[in-house]
Image (cartoon, rainbow, N blue to C red; front, side, top):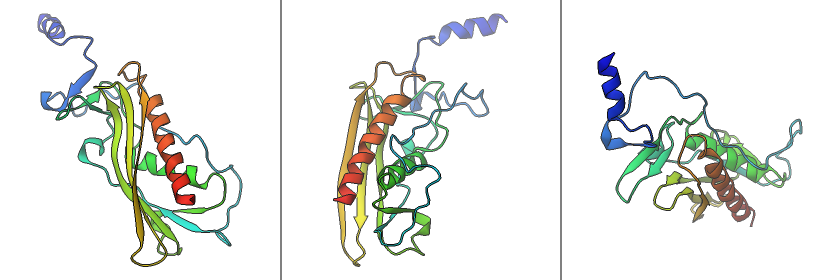
Length: 201
């Protein structure tokens, strides 16, 4: 009991971030009280049947991601060369899957484009949207949520493609488990809306 009490005073209770290099990752530890997620601000209406007949088809693929966000933990860019993770916070799904869903729903919301999952592209002819989710987390230096997506739009015509980077930043009051999901969600939806306008333009 004395040893446990002594250890508790060694680690500051106010420590909000856990830097990768510190070796604080624990396997089999207690799960967080809640799992965090992002959701599209606009999406197709429930119960509505959508047909691809007479509409352009777009296959949306889950983006590639760097190792720092290929995880359920919420990434924080501590400085130019160090990445940390928000303490006691965890995504319900990986960022690449959540962002693909937000992107697909945002593009499909007004019904002008038939949006298909990338895995369905083999049976549906149309354009393809793929890319890399470069940033999806918190920038501790500016106290902002940051989402950056490098989009590649492939045309129906073989050998034709366009590429553009989309990025959004939203202020974060505190880098804590119950304060980060909202700003990241807002930034992700801003990027998705810009991508949707680009695809339809």
